[in-house]
Picture 1 (cartoon, helix red, strand yellow):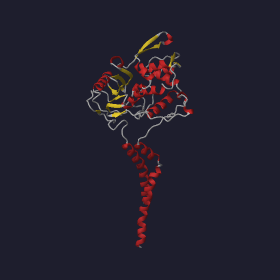
Picture 2 (cartoon, one colour):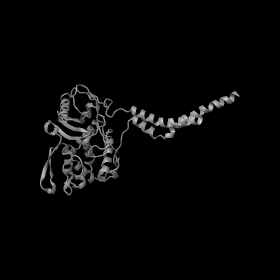
Picture 3 (cartoon, one colour):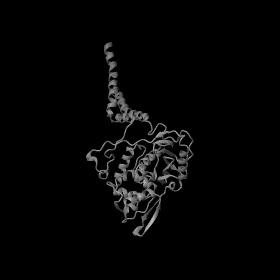
Length: 375
């Protein structure tokens, strides 16, 4: 009987110990960016009431100060559609030389979803493919760019997940760099704002995001055709900086847009919207610009973790790296709760059971000792 009780206690402690530690660790963590910025479908603003929008989640933030000025379910993990290409660009832009030639392949042309028109055997530059990726949301252009980089698509996916962690975008997991509805692929309105902030800090990203028109070669090099930016904010909103739109059947409309007025640069991100996304984005931006002086921050965009100084041997371009999920120089800063949880999960499973089992053994032996004394 004692052996049975001991076995049951050991099993219970082995199972319950780590689970309790995990739950305690998660419960002690605050949402990234502030306590108000949760995944709950609640509109958060302080100082003025924001306009109603149809998106399931959104964020409005000041890119210069990093202050989040309004939000709705900012950390809800949803399908990003082609707005995920902002993260793809963050990974590829520093790695690829804009003047490099790229020859279109059958795999590029055969990809599903939106295309800019990459034809097998036709010559492109990396620069032109980035334009096709931003303006037309071309999945074929994304495929060609990823294939041109070392390690191809699998390595790009690893780098994207590593980059997301590096900048604090912990709601994001990538399985397809085009943003298509792939299993296990998700992001959040908050993370999209982080991607926009990091991207618009780059001159090349900002240039591609705000380009209205470009020309792509026809098959057989028979002239060119015009490609227009799908982000309508660029064409009808004063001070618009563009960025990226997205749509899939499951994600519905997603959006990342930015504008600069009165010395302020704002970004608005929206996810899972049925329709009217440009109008809703315009209304949110206008409301924020108009009420800027009244608004109090409800959170902030976290800053990217600083990389340690590079040694002389680390000074080589990233293009030649091996494409691991954690490139040199990247690191993730853990909160105290995360650190405790990580430590708890590293303790061997048997360690949770050993102290209670020893105590239980002493307890079970105690009656026999007492019986001997009575005799």
